[in-house]
Length: 144
Image 1 (cartoon, rainbow, N blue to C red):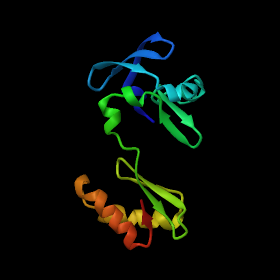
Image 2: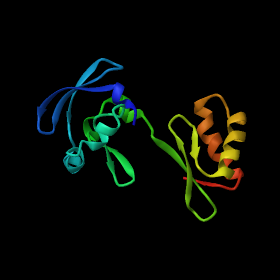
Image 3: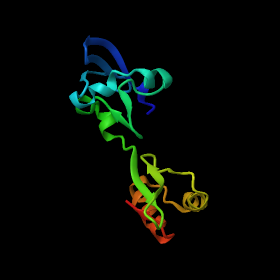
Image 4: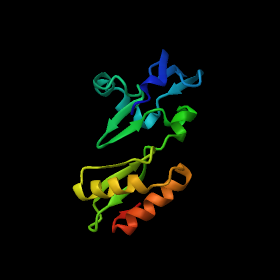
């Protein structure tokens, strides 16, 4: 959500077409709002309320969607928002592991597991994702 500092709209070229720049790489690109997301893009209340958010991000129910998915720059295509969902014994999602490999949860028991996990987790991200899944399964959680 916080890629607003990295993707800048330079100029509006048409009703749903923009000249933009990927600031981190200095790469200009043309972004056209995906046809199936134009109804979302028209509402500017989300970017107005969240000025640090990417200008092309919009809420869609409980999700946030990129409205330029087809034209989004490489930094967006490689970013992984949620890489793992943590489920309790009933199958309810009680936590998520994000692209930074941090476990996010409101569940007190899972928070305690997170604290233990953070102390033991491998330092290498390449090893950590698989290790986190195995660790959570060992503690009785389902992951997907």
